Amino acid sequence: MPLPSLPQRFAALLAAPSVSCTQPALDQSNRAVVELLAGWLGELGFTCELQEVQPGKFNLLASRGQGPGGLVLAGHSDTVPFDEALWRSNPLGLSERDGRWYGLGSCDMKGFFALVIEAVQGLLEHPFRQPLLILATCDEESSMSGARALADAGRPLGRAAVIGEPTGLRPIRLHKGVMMERIDIHGQSGHSSDPSLGHSALEAMHASIGELMTLRRQWQQAFNNPQFSVPQPTLNFGCIHGGDNPNRICGQCSLEFDLRPLPGMDPQQLRAAIRAKLQPLAERHQVRIDYAPLFPGVPPFEQAADCELVRLAERLTGHAAEAVAFGTEAPYLQQLGCETIVLGPGDIACAHQPDEYLEMARIEPTVRLLRDLIQHYCL
Image 1 (cartoon, one colour):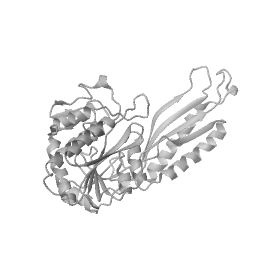
Image 2: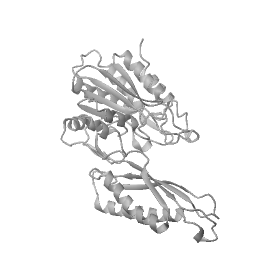
Image 3: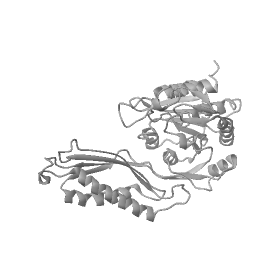
Image 4: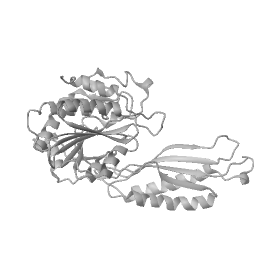
């Protein structure tokens, strides 16, 4: 039976909801997406393996050809949540206008898999001397549990790995790490008319934020990498919650923040520095401060500039390898012995927001690039 056309495959992937979110009410399974991919790839002669990482969350590993080495074309099957009312069209449908394909996951990054299949279809008459592996992971947009599970299992994948995240078809060999952290301060509530009746968690949090801002300044003075458009590490205060009424001393306050270290910065040392600042505050304000990661941090990523994959990608794209500020699954594939780059057709500027899109002009160059990579490593 012939496979659906490229637009039909693209639309089917968008129509299969696969939101990954820290909020349980918004979180969804990705099973429908990986089963679609497994069905199509199975028709093309790939051996498909679904790995359940946790209930309702699956990795897909599809392979064609045998032996060591080969190429991994990788990406994540989940999306971020979406604000449907802010979209001009159905987020879960494929809409074409202004030379763009719109839809949730078109850019970041379910659409990449539709292009991978298009590239593969043109090469099936050739024998695969080295294996081609297509990897679709779960929960990249939250815990990265899919990529972590692969790294923990330690099963070698291939000689080279290309992750199709949105890079505008420019090869990426460095990115910052991602640390999502949480501070919980437990004080003592009391009547606001007499401050001695309690210990304000909110005031202790104010002091904690001040210490974090001081650390941020120190880190930004000490670390700089001009290859990044934002050359310093960043620390963003993302959300804060505390107290319940103006006339009560705040008994509990929590803060979630995002820290993006540069390659060469050790996440454990960063956390130790934060703890060293928080402990004296807890004693001074007579509160308890709990500090822990929301998720295990994504390490900073760097692939050697002179490796085979980077040089090949630079030659095929005509662009020198660059650095980006966002995190990917690249460090985990690197841990499995793959030379790894990030290289995909989307634009990060439109990811994670209403009316996400893929430029249609990028489709044919992406398919051609993927075929060149497959021919180099597999044929």
